Length: 106
View 1 (tube, rainbow, N blue to C red):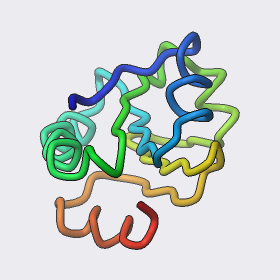
View 2 (tube, rainbow, N blue to C red; view 1 turned 90 degrees about the horizontal axis):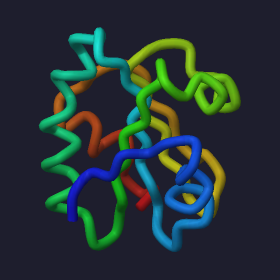
View 3 (cartoon, helix red, strand yellow; view 1 turned 180 degrees about the horizontal axis):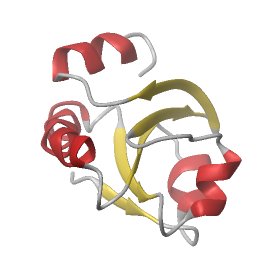
């Protein structure tokens, strides 16, 4: 699997109606910490893709979704399960801390 690109057109289908948990990375092109965690998220997807989908949503292009979920800064990661946000992580973290924060949620 690969990290999927989320848009306003596919968000409901890919995230809200997904049959497995989805970790959504709210990011922006101008955000250095967003670029730092991108390879970490790719690793998490490759290692846990059977149980978890990872998607990236450009917050500058999809402000309506950013507003809907109360995202105040980038990067913000929100884990959705059964169409509902169950965990939010703000800022870049090392892989082991991200996995620790997500433990038990997927």
